[in-house]
Image (cartoon, rainbow, N blue to C red):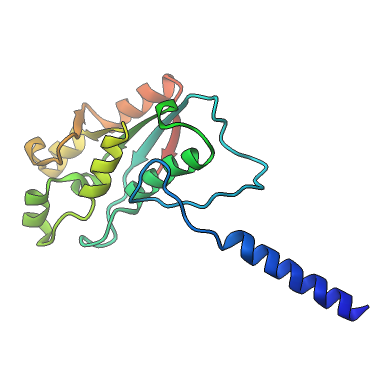
Amino acid sequence: MIMKKIIALVAAVVFVTVSFAQDKVNPIIKDFGPVYEIPDAVEKPDPKMNYKLLVDLVMASIKPDTINLGIEAACTLLNLHGVGGVPKEKINMVMAVHNAAGYTILNNEAYKARYKVDNPNLPMIKALLDAGVKIVVCGQTLKKRGIDPSTLAPGIGVATSALTTITTYQLKGYALIKW
């Protein structure tokens, strides 16, 4: 009887290990935000839905030479919907950047002048923009922090404020995700 329990336990451990030992995938953002396919998930994104996602990004990078985890999480969010079968054309994402995160979207020249290292976020920002994500920075953040809009990474728009961007998109039916 004990041997049967041990065999069952070992079989269960092997099954769980094998089922979770699969490779990561990047269905929408190819180089960032890898995710796992979960074939037995009982809750999955609906590929027939149109997704409206609003990312509120306030966090800065932990260190200037490391990527911003909130920007990477936005890549992951897109890939999670993609792994669930949602085509990128059915995902509308807006990212409102403000507070300390304002520095993470500087162009390389401005970032390097400030931190003495290249901006590690630029490839992720470009990947998000290429995937159709609209990225805007809070104009109030730019003014309060003395950031010249001409020093932003290419493709970044300026909003009157993050707060009005967030309220406007929420009233348009966008789901708010805060990082």
